[in-house]
Image (cartoon, rainbow, N blue to C red; front, side, top):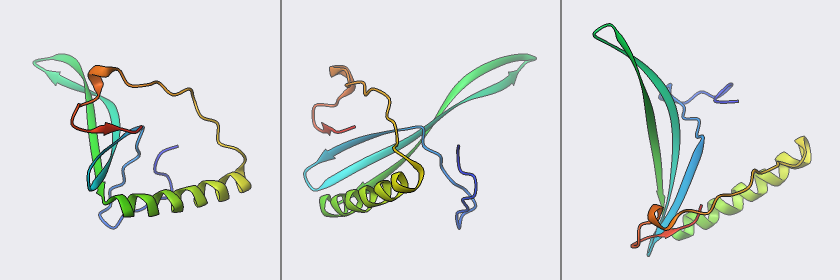
Length: 106
């Protein structure tokens, strides 16, 4: 899996392992995230740090709905060619994970 066969104009690509969607009046934000371990050598000792990178995408509700349609069409085409995509069970967010001033989608 990953970003095999994909090249970006900047030379960097981002393979998201997870995402969160939140919305407020006038905007929908999809925050894609990647989490990876990093080993640091500090004074001869190795320390493991978990690094989390984020790529938030902010859209108007109209652009988000248009994106949804394009994504649905492409997923349908993918499944017709490669078979049904199986999803793991979805975990509902804990109340402490959701900021009260926004609405949680995914």
